[in-house]
Length: 301
Image 1 (cartoon, helix red, strand yellow):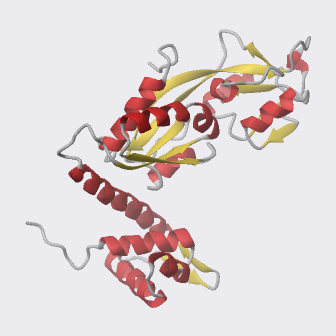
Image 2 (image 1 turned 90 degrees about the vertical axis):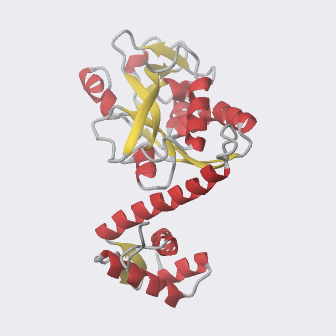
């Protein structure tokens, strides 16, 4: 039987690292964990000694992770999550159809509004022992997949197929391909001549080439916070927008949606999880409900 060594980090040491990173200081971490500040300091020093690297820059403003600390905290979150899953899976071993425990979901706004609600209803009905926790994350930078890579989410609803590679240790599967459309006020004789209303999440690498080839699309004159604000501005007659189908679910009658034609861009939406969690009961149950909730004509091949 393998034995622990002096260089092994105990789960409590991992919890301390995560708490310091999340709260930004030793004192705040101590309060969150119910420990003394000296106990937190002692634990961090011990972890740094075992790892052989400085994990936090200490200062008057608190504690900030070093590059080594960022990597250590990411792994700590994922290890702690696997320990939670281990316990839940062991309890449910005698009842393989009764998945239980927390499942943490990261989703961008339109997916959280229009894709997740029926999925969560089905999940609650079929698996009352599963507790979903949803965080809405902007799909810019590392986006929702970054939440999974950092150990903050078990599964992300993400846009797939961009130029940025998937972080190591993650797996992705497509769910649906959604087309983009032109959105404008109804009855306008020349909607393509209107000013452009846009938001930061809209133009990813999957649409950039198409976007650049359209000489009729002007530079955005209005930058909104999210797709909901874009729809409100278009509805108010402030311009036109180019938006993906999820963002247009339930669009008001005060906007018209015009097909962009056979060369229109599409955005692939899917889910991302870790290779370790992909086989867990809670993630498998969630994926089944995600796929079951999609109309047959919207599923990704």
